[in-house]
Structures are given as structure tokens and as C-alpha cells.
Length: 158
Image (cartoon, rainbow, N blue to C red; front, side):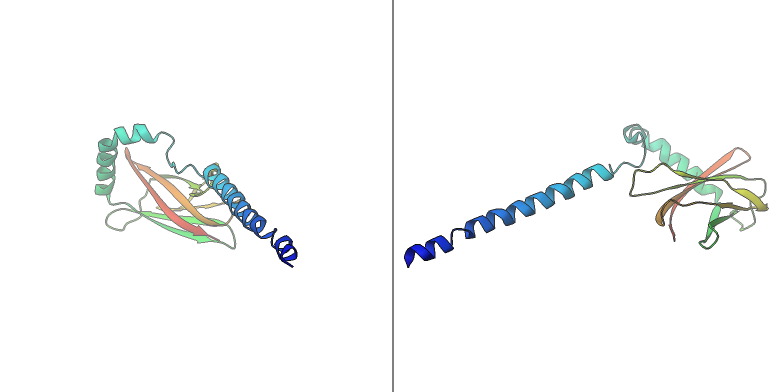
């Protein structure tokens, strides 16, 4: 009887070994996907940007003194992105040049360029063919009279 019980229980240690092998295998796959999918770097040369951080902060203060504002509207049914840019007093920013691109924050994808046309003074619109829906960073650059204003905002495009 003892021999029959001993032979029946021989597989139990192998269940533990198999269970741990599954856990280690799944963890290895998850680590591979996590490390290979997103480097965590947003700028191409983060070290140089860090070394010149004071200049970056000074540029941002100059931009903030302009007081320019950007309002965005996304029309999912038509794929139309609308931007309204205004000055500190809330008046449309006439004569401005606006460029924009969409960057996927959690994936290594090339930016999606947005071609914007002026519809009214201070209002711009363009159509976008999105590869995927979800969270995007909208990088907008406004130039007028030698001043340059840049802003990044997170938008959910569905």
C-alpha cells in the first residue's frame, strides 16, 4: 500500500516546477514587451535638453508672457481637427501661421502631420486620417510677428 501511495504522489513536485516555469515564462514575455515597446524618452536628445534646461525655462517664460491660447475641437465623424488661436485679450490671432502634429505618447510611431488651413482669422482646420484611436499628444506651433508659441496638449481622439 505504501508503494502505491508513493507512486501516486510523484507528480506533485513536478506540478510546482511546471507552475513556476509558467510564471517565469509569462514574466519573461511581459518584460520583453515592456522594454521593447516604449523607451520612455520623449525628446530625441534628452541629455542636451537637460544641460540647457535654464534656456528651455526662459523660452517658456517668454511664451507665457504672450498669453496666447489654443482651443481645439475634434469632430470624430468627419476626422476634422479645428483650432482657434487667440491672444491674451481673447481676440482672434489674425495673421498667425499654425502648424501641428499628433504624437502617440505610448508607442513608437512616426508623428502624424496635420495640414491646417485658415478658415477665419485665428481659426484653422484640417482633416486627419488616424491610424488608431485613443490618446494623442497634439503639438501646436504658432508663429506671428517673430514670436513663436508652442504647446502640447493631450487629446483623446475617438
